[in-house]
Length: 255
Image 1 (cartoon, one colour):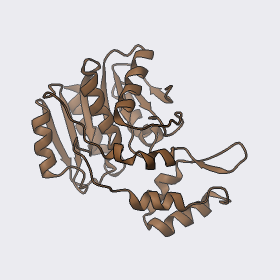
Image 2 (spheres, rainbow, N blue to C red):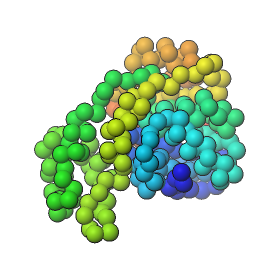
Image 3 (spheres, one colour):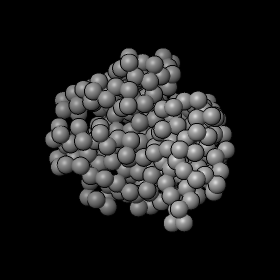
């Protein structure tokens, strides 16, 4: 799996992994700030997302293997790993399976626990859009808004709407596969032993993704862990509170 990526700057490598339905473009502003702080920011499109290839199987072992192979192919033997939501579980799985390549781990608004189904409305809206007949992005926006009634989510999806060579529209993410393997995306990440790699969990204060019980699990699973809540942020912490997120992340990686 040859992943699409973008490298910003020079210095110690910081690999940034996006969430479900996302792409590296969602983290460009954040990555540029990491570059400005003197690090090499490496933004990756995970398989079946963005401009990376589509596949026929999707699970965290494969996603972590992809990142590890990317690191080996680019002679990156150790890096700080940052992952948001689904990307956070990829980052945790990479840390579990290849601890020698992770110097520090940062997980943004996701826990290692298994989650209940939570994207039914999004999948319904995405599948309801007949891309063969859509004539414009505005038409897609109107139809998605009618289904979701969430302008921010609609704009997030529209960033992942591209065109084929015949000018018809297509999702950049592999929608049928993500739906088929959705249970794998909800899966827990289970460490056989306590992880002693320095770890930071960043929690959105308005997000339900990291519960109090999850915080207990995190504290038991990671021996050198800090959990910080950003009160003003929802699940998309980098969009809701970019300055606050950068502040806590830079303090952690520069220490």
